[in-house]
Image (tube, rainbow, N blue to C red; front, side, top):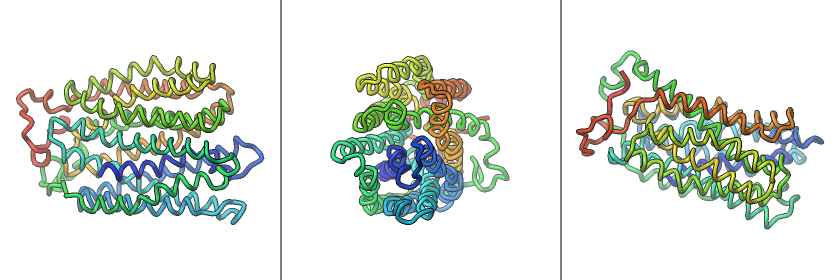
Length: 424
């Protein structure tokens, strides 16, 4: 299941890493900044349909099952990635090219919007209760594995191909690598057992008139925490574009920044999940986020001032590690606070709204701020504000780790009929 999740995020994030090349292919302009902005705006368009995917596919995960919802989202993503890779350039078919690209991005957004809810619900329901943090950390670990693989593909292509070849067809190879693995991902997901337990009228079941009402506080805090994490995460993904377009560093070095971001995530995501099982969700989400607040400005200053490979790669590692440790705790805390009958749909909607509002706009806003102010530290200011908002929400979030909220909890209960109580 987590392999399928990694493939989905590889497909979606590859666009961000090749934004410059895609902009030249489908949005040619005499002004390089305008071409890049148009490409990033199309990247953002994929976030417009994520809430729709979260609502439709997420609720399908609650009504029909986690597995059918995950299979559907993966199949839609596969269709979108193939279409993106095979769309002719603007020079070949004119205005139809950007129209098709935007359409495939909208389909990608819909598919990915419905991915996180069912897959995270599946992970937490398949996990032993005292290892939920570790299991749910696989959600972010596989996303970062996708970042790592996409970065390695980018480094390889940047080293093997000339600039014109990378613009003309090299970026398409990166998309097609993901497309080739789609059939294997579908087979893996079709073979999974179902974890959804039929719901009763209690704990958010269909017998309640408004099953979401007791969980509005969780939803609001979740939106802020996930929004904060989204801005930080997509700024980390933006480092490839930032290094190349703003700092004018070599393409292979810019893609190496992505490798560092992905590698740090793969290593520290499960560490954060494991720590949250031992010490609680709240401590492990909050402490690294506070540390990140003090590291943002020094890291961006060093990267923009020295503009060396060492400064770039070290800065990316410093900015990634605290967020990776914290992110798993945030996701598992929100998921644990929701009962099974509404877990997939509610989590998918909360997540998709947060990602749509901030993930789709972050890279565009930062690029615009840099172009408008001429300040290479603009990303640091934006990230700093996001981290502060996240810290405030984390302070207000209640502890959800089973062993901490109930010291007598023996770890033997299964999640379905023994779901933890929601907020009161």
